[in-house]
Length: 424
Image: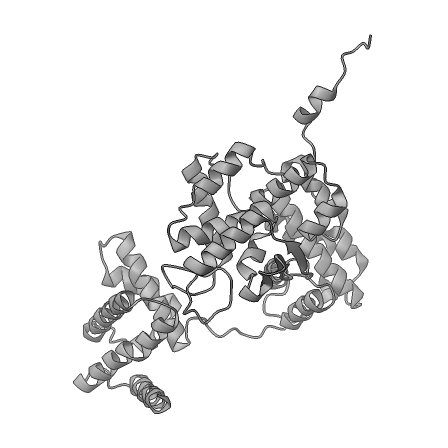
């Protein structure tokens, strides 16, 4: 078996070398090109979990495009393509074709570029890059910030550094309060107040880090505008008891995908897990005997252990025994299927799964995301008499201020307690 893989690797490397140095216009070059599509590219797609039918379909589309390139006046080869050429190339190759067809060919080309290792263009090292790297390392190593928060911080800080310094040298002494305010106005334009407040907060914390390093004055931190938001607008509408049951009934538990979606949703409704915590769960995180779940550290950098209620335990056992792909090389608890069977889930897939369930149940069109389920869990606990401290422990909050957002009582719930006035 090892010799077989070595021979396959040598043939793939030889084919890449021939493509790289030309001769693709000759019959031999075309044969080598097709061999690379059939062997190397096919093995790459199999590694991603694609079925044999999908792999064959991808290979046929790529071979058809390769033949068109060979006969086209541009005389390009597949190994000369990059991401920037794809839109114009498909517009010329597929004139007057449907959006679906163009999307499928674009997907094939993107997989081909990833297989070739040329999907992402090499990034030029800018003088301000060390500031971004050091700040992200500080957040992860010293503050214990989760991956999701670090990604948002990286996007906002990089946008500021690129806007302020471009590709030039970093000169903090030249940055003024007017520059900070101008960037802040650009950054929050067209977004909701709650998102604008979060973006400016990340910029303020970065400038605090720069001030701690002694590179800028405290005036730059104070120059970042502050946006006031109504606290009540941050709390989404929760599911009622009827909607709670309706949502769970909307998942068909006769298919592997339905069992997975039901178990994931139950973890958010009955355990209060975040979406990123659900997709980060691994098989070894579930103690079936002790009926305990070890939640991995994600957003706050700290994990926690939760008892597993009977409905959640039954749903997890049903999925693992009858739905979870056994042949997967990953140890994540929840995996993808039927497409890319056995591959890890993403936050986008989980979000789409829950939103499709919202639509099936006829819930309001404005309902999006998975955090509503976490709010429902905390609010139900609070209404049943649980205190803020136990709820904070179950949610994994460090500060009680974060928990009070979930446990706020609506005015309508207090109306029965109001006595008539004047009192008699």
